[in-house]
Image (tube, rainbow, N blue to C red; front, side):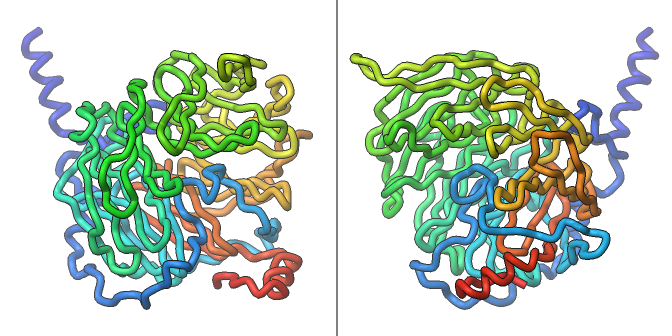
Length: 456
Protein backbone atom coordinates (compact mmCIF):
# COMPACT_ATOMS: atom_id res chain seq x y z
CA UNK A 1 0.00 0.00 0.00
CA UNK A 2 2.79 2.41 0.94
CA UNK A 3 4.59 1.63 -2.29
CA UNK A 4 1.42 2.29 -4.28
CA UNK A 5 0.93 5.67 -2.59
CA UNK A 6 4.55 6.65 -3.18
CA UNK A 7 4.30 5.58 -6.82
CA UNK A 8 1.12 7.64 -7.31
CA UNK A 9 2.72 10.68 -5.69
CA UNK A 10 5.77 10.23 -7.86
CA UNK A 11 3.66 10.16 -11.01
CA UNK A 12 1.95 13.45 -10.09
CA UNK A 13 5.33 15.16 -9.68
CA UNK A 14 5.78 14.68 -13.44
CA UNK A 15 2.89 17.05 -14.21
CA UNK A 16 2.27 20.77 -13.86
CA UNK A 17 -1.17 22.38 -13.66
CA UNK A 18 -2.23 25.42 -15.69
CA UNK A 19 -5.63 25.57 -13.99
CA UNK A 20 -8.80 23.88 -15.20
CA UNK A 21 -11.21 24.15 -18.10
CA UNK A 22 -14.88 25.09 -17.86
CA UNK A 23 -15.75 21.41 -17.68
CA UNK A 24 -13.56 21.10 -14.56
CA UNK A 25 -10.96 19.09 -16.50
CA UNK A 26 -7.41 19.70 -15.30
CA UNK A 27 -5.15 21.61 -17.69
CA UNK A 28 -2.07 19.44 -17.16
CA UNK A 29 1.28 19.53 -18.96
CA UNK A 30 4.58 17.73 -18.46
CA UNK A 31 6.53 19.48 -15.71
CA UNK A 32 9.61 19.83 -17.95
CA UNK A 33 7.62 21.26 -20.87
CA UNK A 34 7.95 25.02 -21.31
CA UNK A 35 4.86 27.05 -20.52
CA UNK A 36 3.65 29.75 -22.89
CA UNK A 37 4.85 32.31 -20.34
CA UNK A 38 8.32 30.76 -20.19
CA UNK A 39 8.56 30.78 -24.00
CA UNK A 40 7.51 34.44 -23.99
CA UNK A 41 10.16 35.36 -21.41
CA UNK A 42 12.81 33.38 -23.30
CA UNK A 43 12.24 35.42 -26.46
CA UNK A 44 13.70 38.55 -24.88
CA UNK A 45 14.29 41.75 -26.85
CA UNK A 46 10.61 42.64 -26.69
CA UNK A 47 10.81 45.73 -24.51
CA UNK A 48 9.09 48.83 -25.92
CA UNK A 49 11.35 50.85 -28.18
CA UNK A 50 9.10 53.75 -29.16
CA UNK A 51 6.48 55.89 -27.51
CA UNK A 52 3.22 56.86 -29.11
CA UNK A 53 2.45 60.53 -29.69
CA UNK A 54 0.96 62.06 -26.52
CA UNK A 55 -2.83 62.28 -26.51
CA UNK A 56 -4.76 65.16 -25.10
CA UNK A 57 -6.57 64.52 -21.82
CA UNK A 58 -9.78 65.54 -23.57
CA UNK A 59 -9.44 62.62 -25.97
CA UNK A 60 -12.24 60.29 -24.94
CA UNK A 61 -11.60 56.59 -24.54
CA UNK A 62 -13.06 54.45 -27.30
CA UNK A 63 -13.53 51.57 -24.85
CA UNK A 64 -12.82 52.93 -21.35
CA UNK A 65 -12.70 49.68 -19.44
CA UNK A 66 -14.32 46.41 -18.45
CA UNK A 67 -17.15 45.53 -20.90
CA UNK A 68 -17.23 49.02 -22.43
CA UNK A 69 -18.57 52.45 -21.43
CA UNK A 70 -21.51 51.05 -19.43
CA UNK A 71 -20.00 47.70 -18.41
CA UNK A 72 -22.71 45.95 -20.42
CA UNK A 73 -20.80 44.46 -23.43
CA UNK A 74 -23.04 46.42 -25.79
CA UNK A 75 -21.72 48.07 -28.98
CA UNK A 76 -24.34 50.48 -30.37
CA UNK A 77 -23.94 52.09 -33.78
CA UNK A 78 -21.99 49.21 -35.35
CA UNK A 79 -23.24 46.83 -38.02
CA UNK A 80 -21.03 44.14 -39.53
CA UNK A 81 -21.30 41.79 -42.47
CA UNK A 82 -22.49 38.43 -41.23
CA UNK A 83 -21.65 36.35 -44.30
CA UNK A 84 -18.15 35.36 -43.23
CA UNK A 85 -17.80 32.92 -46.11
CA UNK A 86 -17.73 35.96 -48.41
CA UNK A 87 -16.30 38.58 -46.00
CA UNK A 88 -14.42 36.82 -43.20
CA UNK A 89 -12.62 38.58 -40.32
CA UNK A 90 -9.21 39.81 -41.45
CA UNK A 91 -6.31 39.06 -39.11
CA UNK A 92 -4.24 42.21 -38.51
CA UNK A 93 -1.76 40.72 -36.08
CA UNK A 94 -1.22 38.14 -33.34
CA UNK A 95 1.40 38.10 -30.61
CA UNK A 96 2.19 36.24 -27.38
CA UNK A 97 0.99 37.79 -24.13
CA UNK A 98 1.65 37.01 -20.49
CA UNK A 99 -1.05 35.10 -18.58
CA UNK A 100 -3.99 36.84 -16.96
CA UNK A 101 -7.78 37.21 -17.22
CA UNK A 102 -7.68 40.91 -18.06
CA UNK A 103 -9.55 42.28 -21.06
CA UNK A 104 -8.67 45.56 -22.83
CA UNK A 105 -9.34 49.26 -22.64
CA UNK A 106 -8.80 51.33 -25.81
CA UNK A 107 -7.99 55.00 -26.44
CA UNK A 108 -6.68 56.79 -29.50
CA UNK A 109 -5.13 53.83 -31.32
CA UNK A 110 -3.60 52.37 -28.13
CA UNK A 111 -4.89 49.57 -25.98
CA UNK A 112 -4.11 48.58 -22.41
CA UNK A 113 -4.18 45.24 -20.61
CA UNK A 114 -2.64 43.43 -17.62
CA UNK A 115 -0.49 40.32 -17.69
CA UNK A 116 2.03 38.30 -15.68
CA UNK A 117 5.64 38.15 -16.80
CA UNK A 118 7.71 36.02 -14.46
CA UNK A 119 7.84 37.62 -11.02
CA UNK A 120 6.29 40.88 -12.25
CA UNK A 121 2.65 41.82 -12.63
CA UNK A 122 2.57 44.06 -15.68
CA UNK A 123 0.34 46.85 -16.97
CA UNK A 124 1.03 47.06 -20.71
CA UNK A 125 0.19 49.50 -23.48
CA UNK A 126 0.27 48.38 -27.12
CA UNK A 127 -0.42 49.81 -30.56
CA UNK A 128 -3.86 48.69 -31.70
CA UNK A 129 -2.86 48.67 -35.38
CA UNK A 130 0.39 46.68 -35.04
CA UNK A 131 0.33 45.00 -31.63
CA UNK A 132 3.77 46.45 -30.88
CA UNK A 133 4.50 47.34 -27.23
CA UNK A 134 4.48 51.04 -26.33
CA UNK A 135 5.20 50.97 -22.58
CA UNK A 136 5.06 48.66 -19.57
CA UNK A 137 4.69 49.24 -15.87
CA UNK A 138 5.85 46.48 -13.53
CA UNK A 139 4.99 45.58 -9.94
CA UNK A 140 7.17 42.87 -8.33
CA UNK A 141 4.31 40.51 -7.36
CA UNK A 142 3.00 37.24 -8.72
CA UNK A 143 -0.35 35.52 -8.20
CA UNK A 144 -1.32 31.98 -9.16
CA UNK A 145 -4.27 29.73 -8.36
CA UNK A 146 -5.21 26.21 -9.36
CA UNK A 147 -8.42 27.33 -11.07
CA UNK A 148 -7.21 29.94 -13.58
CA UNK A 149 -3.43 29.88 -13.35
CA UNK A 150 -1.11 32.88 -13.11
CA UNK A 151 -1.72 36.56 -13.61
CA UNK A 152 -3.96 39.53 -12.80
CA UNK A 153 -7.73 39.22 -13.15
CA UNK A 154 -9.04 42.78 -13.60
CA UNK A 155 -9.23 45.06 -16.65
CA UNK A 156 -7.64 48.56 -16.81
CA UNK A 157 -9.88 51.63 -16.72
CA UNK A 158 -9.08 54.81 -18.70
CA UNK A 159 -10.26 58.21 -17.51
CA UNK A 160 -8.95 61.72 -18.31
CA UNK A 161 -5.56 60.62 -19.58
CA UNK A 162 -4.88 58.12 -16.80
CA UNK A 163 -5.01 54.34 -16.58
CA UNK A 164 -6.28 52.79 -13.35
CA UNK A 165 -5.40 49.15 -12.69
CA UNK A 166 -6.06 46.72 -9.85
CA UNK A 167 -3.76 43.75 -9.47
CA UNK A 168 -4.54 40.26 -8.22
CA UNK A 169 -2.73 40.87 -4.90
CA UNK A 170 -4.39 44.25 -4.27
CA UNK A 171 -2.16 46.91 -5.85
CA UNK A 172 -4.13 49.86 -7.26
CA UNK A 173 -2.19 52.02 -9.73
CA UNK A 174 -2.89 55.36 -11.34
CA UNK A 175 -0.64 55.67 -14.41
CA UNK A 176 -0.15 58.25 -17.13
CA UNK A 177 -1.84 56.80 -20.23
CA UNK A 178 0.83 58.18 -22.58
CA UNK A 179 3.99 56.79 -20.99
CA UNK A 180 2.98 54.60 -18.04
CA UNK A 181 4.63 56.81 -15.42
CA UNK A 182 3.22 56.47 -11.91
CA UNK A 183 0.82 59.15 -10.70
CA UNK A 184 0.16 57.26 -7.46
CA UNK A 185 -0.10 53.71 -6.17
CA UNK A 186 -1.84 52.07 -3.19
CA UNK A 187 -1.87 48.61 -1.63
CA UNK A 188 -5.62 48.31 -1.13
CA UNK A 189 -5.37 44.92 0.57
CA UNK A 190 -3.18 46.47 3.27
CA UNK A 191 -5.39 49.57 3.50
CA UNK A 192 -8.49 47.46 4.16
CA UNK A 193 -6.90 44.55 6.08
CA UNK A 194 -8.39 42.24 3.46
CA UNK A 195 -7.27 38.66 3.07
CA UNK A 196 -6.33 37.57 -0.44
CA UNK A 197 -9.32 35.62 -1.83
CA UNK A 198 -8.67 32.16 -3.32
CA UNK A 199 -8.84 33.44 -6.94
CA UNK A 200 -7.19 36.80 -6.29
CA UNK A 201 -8.66 40.30 -6.38
CA UNK A 202 -10.64 40.70 -9.62
CA UNK A 203 -12.37 44.09 -9.33
CA UNK A 204 -11.93 46.30 -12.40
CA UNK A 205 -11.62 49.93 -11.16
CA UNK A 206 -14.67 52.16 -11.50
CA UNK A 207 -14.13 55.92 -11.86
CA UNK A 208 -17.07 58.02 -10.65
CA UNK A 209 -16.73 61.80 -10.44
CA UNK A 210 -13.52 62.41 -8.46
CA UNK A 211 -12.98 58.94 -6.97
CA UNK A 212 -11.84 55.53 -8.18
CA UNK A 213 -13.61 52.56 -6.62
CA UNK A 214 -12.50 48.92 -6.21
CA UNK A 215 -13.57 45.98 -4.08
CA UNK A 216 -11.54 43.82 -1.69
CA UNK A 217 -13.89 42.50 0.97
CA UNK A 218 -15.74 45.82 0.76
CA UNK A 219 -16.02 48.81 -1.54
CA UNK A 220 -13.21 51.32 -1.09
CA UNK A 221 -12.53 54.60 -2.91
CA UNK A 222 -9.53 56.84 -3.47
CA UNK A 223 -9.17 60.42 -4.68
CA UNK A 224 -8.31 60.27 -8.38
CA UNK A 225 -5.77 63.11 -8.11
CA UNK A 226 -3.91 62.35 -4.88
CA UNK A 227 -4.66 58.68 -4.24
CA UNK A 228 -5.78 59.54 -0.70
CA UNK A 229 -8.47 57.26 0.78
CA UNK A 230 -11.99 58.68 0.63
CA UNK A 231 -14.81 56.40 1.81
CA UNK A 232 -15.13 52.67 2.34
CA UNK A 233 -18.24 50.55 2.69
CA UNK A 234 -19.44 47.65 4.78
CA UNK A 235 -17.69 44.32 4.44
CA UNK A 236 -19.60 41.87 2.26
CA UNK A 237 -17.45 38.80 1.80
CA UNK A 238 -15.50 37.63 -1.25
CA UNK A 239 -16.49 38.76 -4.72
CA UNK A 240 -15.00 38.45 -8.18
CA UNK A 241 -17.48 40.91 -9.64
CA UNK A 242 -16.70 44.61 -10.20
CA UNK A 243 -18.41 47.77 -8.90
CA UNK A 244 -21.11 48.83 -11.34
CA UNK A 245 -22.59 52.31 -11.81
CA UNK A 246 -26.31 52.30 -12.64
CA UNK A 247 -29.15 54.80 -12.47
CA UNK A 248 -32.27 53.31 -10.89
CA UNK A 249 -35.42 55.39 -10.43
CA UNK A 250 -33.44 58.48 -11.41
CA UNK A 251 -30.74 57.93 -8.76
CA UNK A 252 -27.12 57.19 -9.70
CA UNK A 253 -25.72 54.44 -7.49
CA UNK A 254 -22.86 51.97 -7.26
CA UNK A 255 -23.91 48.33 -7.12
CA UNK A 256 -21.69 45.57 -5.80
CA UNK A 257 -22.44 41.86 -5.87
CA UNK A 258 -20.81 39.72 -3.19
CA UNK A 259 -21.26 36.35 -1.51
CA UNK A 260 -24.13 37.81 0.51
CA UNK A 261 -26.15 39.31 -2.35
CA UNK A 262 -26.16 42.82 -3.81
CA UNK A 263 -25.73 46.20 -2.13
CA UNK A 264 -26.32 49.70 -3.56
CA UNK A 265 -24.47 52.75 -2.24
CA UNK A 266 -24.22 56.45 -3.08
CA UNK A 267 -21.16 57.44 -5.13
CA UNK A 268 -20.45 60.51 -2.97
CA UNK A 269 -20.15 58.92 0.48
CA UNK A 270 -20.83 55.21 0.14
CA UNK A 271 -24.07 55.44 2.08
CA UNK A 272 -26.15 52.29 1.68
CA UNK A 273 -29.32 52.87 -0.35
CA UNK A 274 -30.63 49.32 -0.31
CA UNK A 275 -29.59 45.68 -0.05
CA UNK A 276 -30.92 42.44 -1.45
CA UNK A 277 -29.92 39.21 0.28
CA UNK A 278 -29.19 36.14 -1.87
CA UNK A 279 -26.38 34.28 -0.06
CA UNK A 280 -25.48 31.57 -2.54
CA UNK A 281 -21.69 31.83 -2.68
CA UNK A 282 -19.25 33.10 -5.29
CA UNK A 283 -20.31 36.14 -7.34
CA UNK A 284 -18.56 36.92 -10.64
CA UNK A 285 -21.17 38.11 -13.16
CA UNK A 286 -22.18 41.80 -13.51
CA UNK A 287 -25.74 43.08 -12.94
CA UNK A 288 -27.95 44.51 -15.71
CA UNK A 289 -31.04 46.69 -15.99
CA UNK A 290 -34.25 45.80 -17.77
CA UNK A 291 -35.93 48.34 -20.04
CA UNK A 292 -38.42 49.23 -17.29
CA UNK A 293 -35.81 49.72 -14.59
CA UNK A 294 -35.72 46.37 -12.78
CA UNK A 295 -32.43 44.67 -11.96
CA UNK A 296 -31.10 41.32 -13.17
CA UNK A 297 -28.48 39.56 -11.07
CA UNK A 298 -26.85 36.13 -11.13
CA UNK A 299 -25.83 34.01 -8.17
CA UNK A 300 -23.14 31.96 -9.87
CA UNK A 301 -23.05 28.50 -11.38
CA UNK A 302 -25.97 26.32 -10.40
CA UNK A 303 -28.11 29.07 -8.85
CA UNK A 304 -29.62 30.86 -11.82
CA UNK A 305 -30.68 34.43 -12.53
CA UNK A 306 -33.04 36.68 -10.56
CA UNK A 307 -35.07 39.76 -11.44
CA UNK A 308 -35.69 42.23 -8.62
CA UNK A 309 -37.53 45.54 -8.38
CA UNK A 310 -36.26 48.42 -6.27
CA UNK A 311 -39.12 50.38 -4.72
CA UNK A 312 -39.36 53.52 -2.59
CA UNK A 313 -40.96 53.21 0.81
CA UNK A 314 -41.44 55.67 3.70
CA UNK A 315 -38.33 54.36 5.45
CA UNK A 316 -36.14 54.29 2.35
CA UNK A 317 -35.90 51.70 -0.40
CA UNK A 318 -36.79 48.04 -0.55
CA UNK A 319 -36.36 45.22 -3.05
CA UNK A 320 -38.89 42.73 -4.32
CA UNK A 321 -38.10 39.48 -6.12
CA UNK A 322 -40.00 39.26 -9.42
CA UNK A 323 -38.73 35.84 -10.38
CA UNK A 324 -35.77 33.49 -10.08
CA UNK A 325 -34.98 31.28 -13.06
CA UNK A 326 -32.67 28.28 -13.24
CA UNK A 327 -32.94 28.38 -17.03
CA UNK A 328 -29.85 30.58 -17.24
CA UNK A 329 -27.02 29.80 -14.85
CA UNK A 330 -23.95 31.80 -15.88
CA UNK A 331 -20.70 31.11 -14.06
CA UNK A 332 -18.26 33.88 -14.99
CA UNK A 333 -19.84 34.64 -18.37
CA UNK A 334 -21.63 37.97 -18.42
CA UNK A 335 -25.04 38.21 -20.08
CA UNK A 336 -26.62 40.97 -22.18
CA UNK A 337 -30.20 42.30 -22.31
CA UNK A 338 -31.84 43.03 -25.64
CA UNK A 339 -35.39 43.47 -26.89
CA UNK A 340 -37.05 42.00 -23.82
CA UNK A 341 -34.73 39.01 -23.54
CA UNK A 342 -31.53 37.96 -21.78
CA UNK A 343 -28.79 36.30 -23.83
CA UNK A 344 -26.00 34.50 -22.01
CA UNK A 345 -24.63 31.16 -20.92
CA UNK A 346 -26.49 28.43 -19.13
CA UNK A 347 -23.43 26.55 -17.98
CA UNK A 348 -21.41 25.97 -21.15
CA UNK A 349 -24.25 26.43 -23.64
CA UNK A 350 -25.67 29.70 -24.97
CA UNK A 351 -29.27 30.41 -24.00
CA UNK A 352 -32.05 32.99 -24.21
CA UNK A 353 -34.63 33.68 -21.49
CA UNK A 354 -37.58 36.07 -21.34
CA UNK A 355 -37.12 39.18 -19.18
CA UNK A 356 -40.80 39.12 -18.25
CA UNK A 357 -40.86 35.78 -16.44
CA UNK A 358 -37.48 34.06 -16.84
CA UNK A 359 -38.76 31.29 -19.10
CA UNK A 360 -36.29 29.85 -21.57
CA UNK A 361 -36.79 30.62 -25.26
CA UNK A 362 -33.96 28.48 -26.57
CA UNK A 363 -30.65 26.85 -25.71
CA UNK A 364 -27.97 25.93 -28.24
CA UNK A 365 -24.41 26.36 -29.33
CA UNK A 366 -21.63 24.78 -27.33
CA UNK A 367 -19.05 27.52 -26.83
CA UNK A 368 -17.70 26.37 -23.46
CA UNK A 369 -17.36 29.17 -20.94
CA UNK A 370 -17.07 31.84 -23.61
CA UNK A 371 -17.86 35.56 -23.59
CA UNK A 372 -20.01 37.70 -25.88
CA UNK A 373 -20.77 41.18 -27.21
CA UNK A 374 -24.13 42.56 -28.34
CA UNK A 375 -24.60 44.59 -31.54
CA UNK A 376 -28.10 45.93 -30.75
CA UNK A 377 -28.58 47.79 -34.05
CA UNK A 378 -28.22 44.51 -35.87
CA UNK A 379 -29.64 41.94 -33.42
CA UNK A 380 -26.33 40.07 -33.45
CA UNK A 381 -24.13 38.50 -30.77
CA UNK A 382 -20.37 38.26 -31.29
CA UNK A 383 -19.29 35.18 -29.31
CA UNK A 384 -15.72 34.32 -28.35
CA UNK A 385 -15.67 30.65 -27.38
CA UNK A 386 -13.56 29.06 -24.66
CA UNK A 387 -11.43 27.48 -27.39
CA UNK A 388 -10.72 30.85 -29.02
CA UNK A 389 -13.20 30.66 -31.92
CA UNK A 390 -15.34 33.59 -33.07
CA UNK A 391 -19.00 33.07 -33.87
CA UNK A 392 -21.94 35.25 -34.84
CA UNK A 393 -25.31 34.33 -33.34
CA UNK A 394 -28.66 35.97 -33.97
CA UNK A 395 -29.87 37.93 -30.91
CA UNK A 396 -33.39 36.73 -31.52
CA UNK A 397 -35.84 34.95 -29.22
CA UNK A 398 -37.25 32.81 -32.04
CA UNK A 399 -34.55 30.14 -32.05
CA UNK A 400 -30.83 29.60 -31.80
CA UNK A 401 -29.19 30.56 -35.10
CA UNK A 402 -25.46 30.57 -35.64
CA UNK A 403 -24.72 32.90 -38.54
CA UNK A 404 -20.97 32.41 -38.92
CA UNK A 405 -17.88 30.94 -37.28
CA UNK A 406 -14.16 31.56 -37.68
CA UNK A 407 -10.95 30.61 -35.82
CA UNK A 408 -9.21 33.40 -33.89
CA UNK A 409 -6.71 32.42 -31.18
CA UNK A 410 -5.63 29.15 -29.56
CA UNK A 411 -5.84 28.09 -25.95
CA UNK A 412 -8.24 28.41 -23.01
CA UNK A 413 -10.02 31.72 -23.59
CA UNK A 414 -11.99 33.26 -20.73
CA UNK A 415 -11.18 36.94 -21.37
CA UNK A 416 -13.82 39.39 -22.62
CA UNK A 417 -13.49 40.56 -26.26
CA UNK A 418 -13.56 44.24 -27.29
CA UNK A 419 -14.98 45.82 -30.47
CA UNK A 420 -14.14 49.42 -31.43
CA UNK A 421 -15.34 50.44 -34.89
CA UNK A 422 -14.37 47.45 -36.99
CA UNK A 423 -11.40 46.49 -34.77
CA UNK A 424 -11.95 43.35 -32.68
CA UNK A 425 -9.41 42.62 -29.94
CA UNK A 426 -9.24 39.18 -28.31
CA UNK A 427 -6.85 37.51 -25.89
CA UNK A 428 -6.38 34.65 -23.47
CA UNK A 429 -3.62 33.54 -21.11
CA UNK A 430 -1.04 33.07 -23.85
CA UNK A 431 -1.99 34.93 -27.04
CA UNK A 432 -3.76 38.06 -28.21
CA UNK A 433 -4.81 39.27 -31.62
CA UNK A 434 -6.61 41.94 -33.61
CA UNK A 435 -9.10 41.33 -36.41
CA UNK A 436 -10.93 43.66 -38.75
CA UNK A 437 -14.59 42.80 -39.07
CA UNK A 438 -15.98 43.91 -42.45
CA UNK A 439 -18.60 46.56 -41.76
CA UNK A 440 -22.02 46.55 -43.33
CA UNK A 441 -22.29 49.29 -45.93
CA UNK A 442 -24.75 51.31 -43.87
CA UNK A 443 -22.30 51.46 -40.95
CA UNK A 444 -19.39 52.58 -43.10
CA UNK A 445 -21.50 55.22 -44.81
CA UNK A 446 -22.89 56.51 -41.53
CA UNK A 447 -19.41 56.76 -40.04
CA UNK A 448 -18.12 58.69 -43.05
CA UNK A 449 -21.03 61.12 -42.98
CA UNK A 450 -20.65 61.79 -39.27
CA UNK A 451 -16.91 62.29 -39.50
CA UNK A 452 -16.26 59.33 -37.20
CA UNK A 453 -12.99 57.45 -37.44
CA UNK A 454 -13.38 53.80 -38.35
CA UNK A 455 -10.19 51.95 -37.40
CA UNK A 456 -8.66 50.03 -40.28
